[in-house]
Image (cartoon, rainbow, N blue to C red):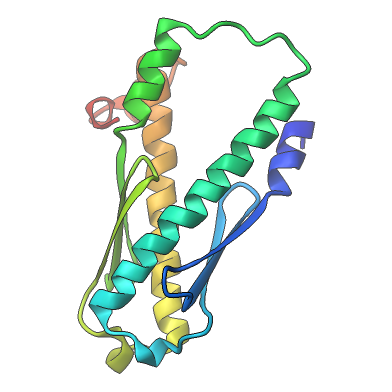
Length: 179
């Protein structure tokens, strides 16, 4: 790995849900872990759990993004930074509107986000009666993994749309308007 990649792989941030019942950590280039903290999984109803996960996602991802940008800035400070171009402004404007989603492996948890800033979590049914805590956390994990994969794909398409990085036509088909 290069020096920047090494530095990014060392990022670790943590945050708690609004009620302090859940904790999430993001490590490296986006490895997310969610676990229950002071409250027991069995104390939650689906709607309350979804709201807590939304608040948790907003805080942990803001902290991750801040740490990520600090690492990139400190690495880039060695060189003279070129002035932003119109393309740079267009890219950031469009990036702020990117909508992504992920559905868990068993379809019990759906996570949506706008620009990894605003979050929405839907939980099908009441998981406490039908899923163990580890099963529920696996559902959350698989939904987040799917959402982050969707985000990476849409950012790649957006990057190609704005900067023309030469993605093959097969990768761009049907996706250019989505970014």
